[in-house]
Image (cartoon, rainbow, N blue to C red):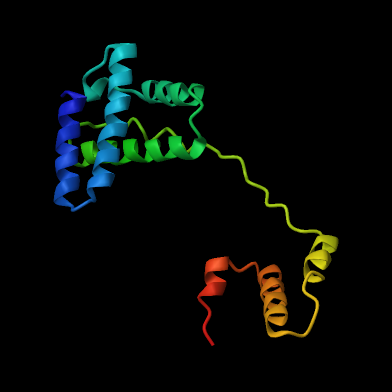
Length: 157
């Protein structure tokens, strides 16, 4: 069965399940781009012909085009949903995406302030006026707890 025909059935299923138009558009576009790539590179149009090597080739293509890991994992999520649908509808027997894992992303290190930097920031507020004391308290609260600014602004009495 043609991959693009099954994609339309998948999109109909998403509409029936009341997915948002934006989500549906993402699923359609991401899967369609993969099918177009596989058809262009390997000449395959039938879903039964798509093997893990073809999907991995598309992922490699995305990496080569400098796509971020988080973006590619989002695309893999779209593929998984599509192939799960095809399995559930008994269109295919083998789920080609099952052997493809998530890409590992590099961990972001957050550099915290040194003791000297904190001390310099706290020394900016000198005096006993209300605003000085309030600002010093806000700075200490932010630095001690790691609370987000929005969370701090939402605190009442």
